[in-house]
Image (cartoon, rainbow, N blue to C red; front, side, top):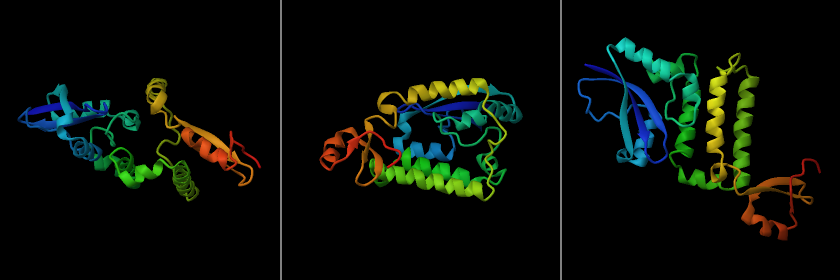
Length: 220
């Protein structure tokens, strides 16, 4: 019996999944059982993924400990992987142990829409006004949750300095140029409508013809 820690890589976007596997056959074609990983395999095609063994362990306990060491909460919070649960246990245990299964479902549904391609939804997100309303609706929902006593699992916890550096490095790469969510957009405002909003830069002439001005005005 082999006890291994493996890494599955999406060769198109670079995202990874790290998991554990107990097997008698190292060539059994196992890519992982993660919820988001399965959706990604379906979207991109299994031929666009590769698997490598990171560690060979001598027992199931050692395998679980090694996965727990690598796939910790900081790792799960990163955006460059498909893991949604801390290692060393089954995924369902992690997301339910504090009664937070709704958080797991929220992340799965969000990734289905954004990462895996609900075409109609993504098309709507191209409309800046719709996107702002959508973001506000999410914000209002969470404000209501906190108002009713919900407490984040991050309360009274802090990222380590090393974790902060990793997040900063990842964000600096992710947000460069066209990867930045604000790339190609700008603020405009209307004195008549007493409103500021963000638009695509190529839309500016159309709005200027309607009396809109460049810039963002907070008070009217």
